[in-house]
Length: 298
Length: 329
Image 1 (cartoon, chains in turn orange, blue):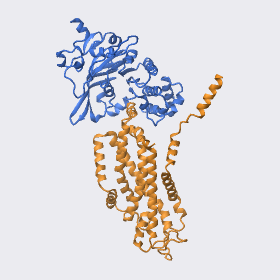
Image 2 (cartoon, one colour):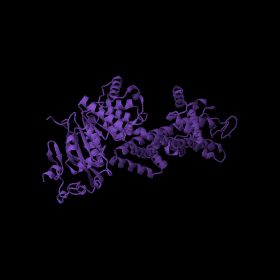
Image 3 (cartoon, chains in turn purple, cyan):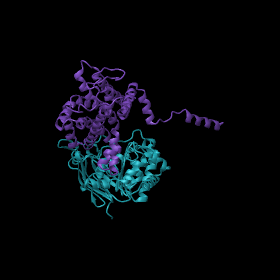
Image 4 (cartoon, chains in turn green, cyan):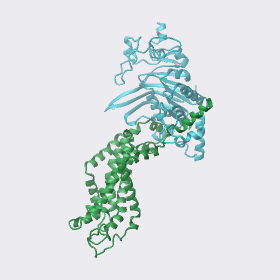
């Protein structure tokens, strides 16, 4: 009798007790509940795939002139129409995904890396280093970011690489500030003191023990930032600071189309729509990540 | 007698509160710890015992702390070392264990990686295999039954007692000469406390490590220490061998502390306590800092800070009206 009881108890504990869930599984489950964020994520994945395979699946050569079909509206042959030189707009946008996304991602990564290092230093060491770094960031915050990027590009000259540098520079202060805040939270933790007590150097304490604690804030803001960077990169190209007119880049395509707005609105509509959707997708995805990772909302 | 392992002379630690506004947390403290000796540092919260230990490790924020005096460890003057030299001492020659084992380990690192970090920082030449072996033997030393399994765990998967064992393993992994234990048992339940204390004594016996045991628990002191230092408001008020301290406390504060420990088998309606509370660091009374709470206080007590005087063999008290003196009078 006692024996059977014992076995039942064991069977119960194995089957009916809630299983300790893997945090990754938990995270994915929570994330999947946010439909808009999932939609954003899927669109980002789609765009990323297009960025990789786009240039090889374009229906027309994005730079081939076709004087027989100038400023043609959307049709079966050119689904998104053609531009003033008869180049296929769909092919140009598809081929331009790589350049537009690449510019935004590179700029974001560069800017984030710089911001993380400065934020870690400011938060960890405090004092004069903190004051200097944060005051410089404040000065940069005082400028509208796009204006700052324009100023940088104006100094170092136009071109895609310089746009990336300009965008990266104005990404730095916001990340420095976010990371500094996260560092201040983590550095008071006992395990950081323990790390120092076993002989970790400041650099090691900073990167091995404190940096992972800032990851949450970092991932969310990075995602949001990519969306902003796409918009800014396109704006700069639109204003003529970035890609030159022969390059297929979303902002540049839009910029050229502007001249024919009255007679060929599709030249502005489609690149504008693609930029809009991509930025929206990154923002929705970022919002979803933030909500999922926020312990207060769960 | 041989050179003490750690000698602290006239240590003053001050914290910055505002521009040119410093408050003194530790006010001229001197003591020593010998190899293989467990010294208890007791006092209530805020009396400066943790600050003293952090000063020895030089773990305070440099920008807001001012430390003066002299700390000699193994012939080296700790306060004069460069930051790099200090790093090679921390964890290697002096290590520390902390009050809350559950939050003392990095939550996103496996136990093995944390132990490897502690070992490899001071033994750069070791191979992966050797490091792993050192980790296993470190965990065996602290009595963890299945070291291989524990090494793969994350801190949240371990109990408080296990975490504290891992902490001790980490602290002992480079065979330090001095271990500073900052309330190592406060966050643990009584049976685990006894195990951890026994473990620390065991390690002391095996390795001849000097241990500075910081605690507010007189039970822990009576159990493990050979010598006790009592601190009050940033000063040492009494120092004596453990038996002597409990049987013959001299300073009124020590007497109050010992009286306020509940005793088995004695029925009292109200536990005796020391009246009043610890003075604010920023508004210290002049003269003896315990005087406002002391039942033996005299007018002369508030004139000058009393110095430690010898009251018996190896027994010092910072009170001119200590018990022996009162008896004589």
